[in-house]
Amino acid sequence: MRIALFVTCVNDLLYPGTGRAVVRLLERLGHTVEFPLTQTCCGQMHGNSGYRAEAVPLVRNVVETFRDYPAVVAPSGSCVAMIRDAYPRLVVDDDRLAAAVAELRPRVYELSELLVDVLGVTDVGAWFPHPVTYHPTCHGLRMLRLGERPLRLLRAVRGLDLIELPDSTECCGFGGTFAVKNAAVSTAMLADKCRAVAGTGATYLAAADNSCLAHIGGGLARTSTAVHAVHYAEILASTPEEPL
Picture 1 (tube, rainbow, N blue to C red):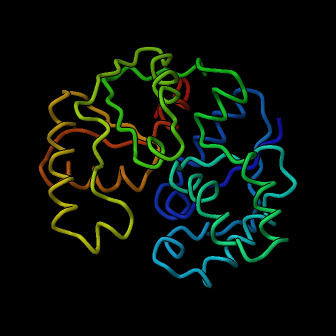
Picture 2: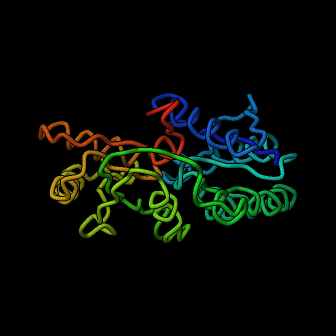
C-alpha cells in the first residue's frame, strides 16, 4: 500500500525518531511510505487559539499535499483529530475547500487505526523486553476513540510486560496552550499523572502523542523518576536487530 507520512510539527522538530520509526515499521510490513516535502503545520495551535484566518491557509496546504494518497498516517492523535474534527468547522464558508477536506478526512489515520483497521495487523513483529505502561492521550481517547487499538498492538510485542496505568483516562494537564495559560492547574494535573506512572513500576511510559509525553516526561525527570517516555511507534519498530 502507498502511504504518506504526515510527521507533524512536534515530531519533525523535536522527535524525528518517531517519524523514522513509523517508516521502518510500515516498510517492514511491506508497504511503501512517502514523505511529501510540502507538508507543514496542520494549524492546530492557530485554530485552537482562535486564529482562524491564519489556520485556513495551513488547512489548504494539508489538503493539497495529501490529496493523491490512498492513506495518510500521522503518529499524533491530536493532529489527526484536528483534521477530522476542526477542519470542517474552519472551512465552512468555502465550499470548494470544504469538499476537499471532506474527501481527505476518511483517508487520514492515527497509526493504530491504520495498522488495526486498515492493514489488519496487531502483531507487527516487534520485540521490546521491558515493563511498559500506556497513557491514552485525550485526543486519542475522546475524539478519535482509539480504544483498545494501541493496547492490542503493545500486547503483541514480544517480551513486553504491559502494566495497567491507574486513572489512565485522566488528562496529563498539557492540552497545548492550556499548560501555558493555566500553569497552576496544569502542574497539579501533571503531578497526579506522574505519581500514577511512577506507581506502576514500569520503566517506560508509552503514548500516541509526543506532546503529552514531553509534558509527562519533563515532570518525571524533575522528580528523578526512572521512567522513560517514548512514543509507542518506536516500541513497535523495535526488533532484536534494530532495538530502540
